Image (cartoon, rainbow over all chains, first blue to last red):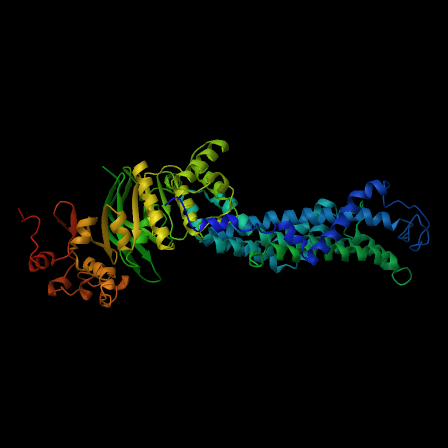
Length: 293
Length: 338
């Protein structure tokens, strides 16, 4: 009799819950976000194939309005550079900087947050004071200062955004880890002789992943915005084309030829919107309370 | 030959301004293949004792005196890396709440494999085979299929089985079970405890069973240790202790249980309760800590702690009045009886 557990039978016959991807795709906001992001990603991948030449080259007469010449669907700017080519290549730079800077932030933020939350006490106090120190400096001005000192280049921009964006993530991770630190699950693994690192990596971080993923998707959007703002102010890498740099260049002719600034501006809006929609959808799809239904 | 021996264990807690003694001069031994039940009401220090056996006291608490010897080695004062090596490998613990003690994001198989590989350098394939065998041993039906299930697909009883499998992954010498069935249905309770009994018989693991359920004690423990307000008040063989409790507190505990036979006979008695409350840890009476609630107490009981004295061959009790109570009930003391 002992081998039969009556409550087991319903568990095995319970219909399988829809997978995570299905749950995500069933949400219109997430679907829209994913589609937009897919388009931007395709543009980034297709850029070298479609526009093999440097997008900073002058290829046609300046101020060619969109639609005036079929070869230049988005027209040309005041130096006769192809805006369409800039958009495609700019997508590469924006995504690259957004993703890499976010990875840098996650590494710092999760590391500091997990350490502070898990060990508590003095380690927590020190790590949190450091975090607060970073939080007292406006992140954009901080990034601006770093890039200005290090000279604008892709590594310096990525580093500056990564170093300034992590504090909120660290606080989020710390709060989640604190919640789990004294859970039965963690106590049980300590009672089984698990080492700190193993418990953090194997038992705590996977359970913190959902909010981190959601935050990360929004952080990529923020990083793209920050990079654009830096480039707009002339602190972008001068050797590559970036959406923010294009907006900045178009600013001077905004009253006569507004499309020069608006088209890359629209690209930034769409990218940020896509990532925010995706973050929203991820939040819903990863939320265990919604999963119960 | 005892595998675990606790000697004069005293556990203290630092509170804001005072130091509170939660467990005082506790001694007991557990032999291979034996189940010792530690019984007492909430707050008597039984769970703290269990945690101290694994060196897992909360940060504000510490072992102030005494020794905990596991296979001859004193765990008190042992540094964290050594303790970590022993935990799970030589001494393991099962917790009260199987619903929350498993990691929801890992499959049960992964969690057992993890427990094995934490202590032993075996390949993933070997660990997997052993984990499957363990699932079989704790009677998880269709273990191979269940291996890749996440904990939320399992019932409470099944999860507790998985917890037992994890605890037994490295064949520990001592298994500490802190109220392992409190969160489970009564029918599942019996299954889980029988499973622990069976595994204990097969492997010779010693079991320290923390419980407040005297029914569980009667069925599954070889010996019983009764704690009251941080002290051992009585210890004895299960059958003797339940049939002829010596300490007034033990009597009270046994009398406080409902009697189903009387109920079926139509009696609707109120349950007997022990009057009064457990004294707070920071305000212990100078004498016997049970004296204020004890119907047998005399003036002498309030003067000093009654010593824990042996009673017969294998029992001990900390009560000044044992002899008088026995005499009044015409039960001969084993020392004077023929």
